[in-house]
Image (cartoon, rainbow, N blue to C red; front, side, top):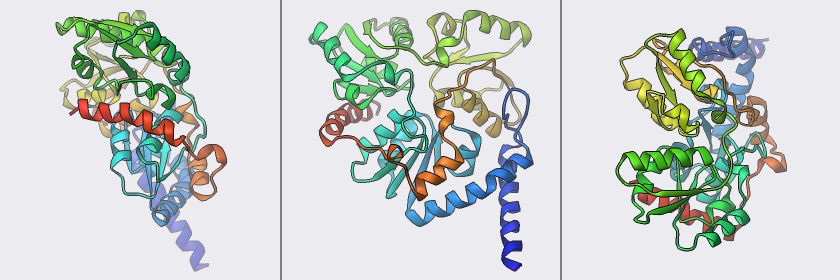
Amino acid sequence: MLQTMDKEARLTEEAHRLYGLLRTVSKDKNSHWSYEDCLKAAPYTLSINRFKKEQNAVILAHSYSTPDLVYGVADYRGDSYELACKARETTADIIVFAGVWFMAETAKILNPGKKVLIPAGRAGCTLADAMTGTDMKKLRALHPGVPALCYINSLAEVKAECDACVTSGNVFDIAQKFLSDKLIFVPDLLMAKNLEAELQRRGTPKEIISFGGSCCVHDKYRPEDVEKLRTDYPGIKIIAHPECPIEVCRLCDYVGSTKGMFSYVGSSKDKMFGMLTEFGLVNRLEAEYPDKKFIWPFGVCSYMKKNTLENTLEALVDPRPEQLVEVAPELAAAAKKSIDKMFELAQ
């Protein structure tokens, strides 16, 4: 009886902890995380945190993951670059990456001797999956001598064929450091246009040669979405990611990476923001800036949301084969060169 009472007390305490973190956070467009939601999550967060400690594991959660993961069990939360840095620095034996495949793949490349797990299994990404290593080889053959940059949202086989990896936060600065008047940038066709325009604005124009696809969230935004936000909410500051169409970015008050958007909100005196990005970042902003209001028209990454508390616990206790991340040593070594070049040039 005493054990049962102790267990109930621990669950209640954990539910209160989660509710204190999530009560201001939207669960969807019409509701917020309730105490009952947190009570349902509590058995999983308690178990995950216990197994994590026992196994010397670290959990990295991308900002687009669900709030129960981000605040309930993650040791670090952030965008692709921030989490790549944490993966590079960790002394843990096991890395659990609540994100999509290319992110977990990058963590494995940086830690070939560690076990890397992804709860969602082979969760894809419309950007990363838009280009193969063979595509990259063909593109470089068409443009001999032109330096090639790949967005971190790319597969290891693409990274292995490029001179440097970049993120949405450092792409502009790194591109400026290449002296060539032409650059290959893959696999985001929309970010390529924003990159070319920004380099022109900075007075360091370059022709950007691109190939690939677009983000299934950010490519849906249109200029009329910006116009509607300004009409419905006078004085609103509108923020977009450079994965959005250039016609949208030109109308916004700030365009930047996930980390950049977070920093912009934090340093701004404004109280209302229109967020043209994925819902998970809106959740983080609601949790960490409860005194500010965030208007989010739409945009959910179904791939990121495949990471759950249930499959995170499964990955720690008894991982399925598809949850275990492996990268062939030769491929990992080649891809690591472009990732290391990013860290070097980003200094």
